[in-house]
Amino acid sequence: MANVQYYDVILKPVVTEKTMELMGDKKYTFLVHPEATKSQIKEAVEKMFDGTKVAKVNTMNCGGKKKRVRGTFKYGKTAATKKAIVQLTEDSKDIEIFQGL
Image (cartoon, rainbow, N blue to C red; front, top):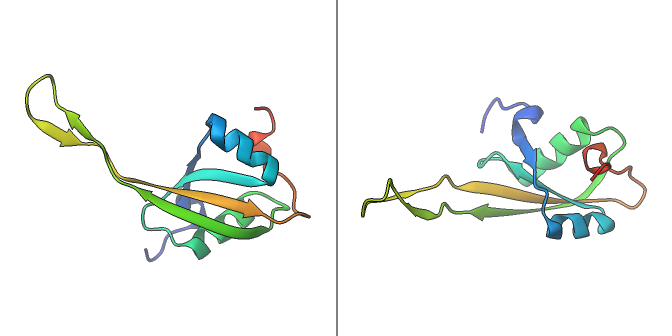
């Protein structure tokens, strides 16, 4: 993944009931670029959100699901994604995009 900027690494936040519960422990979940490494994700979070300090990053690759195409017996596949759960340190600030939720 050569020549990728930090704002290309994080695609969007994941907002579900489970991720909302994790926010109490300062864990935030994002969809990230499929080729992003843990160090690139850590750097991107620290640059995009001021006052944050990342303690740990966990990543998971989610394969695409098998779906039927247009009611026929043919099958296609949805796109594969990658999620990252970012653990912030105790003294870092919270991420602002999750504050109003």
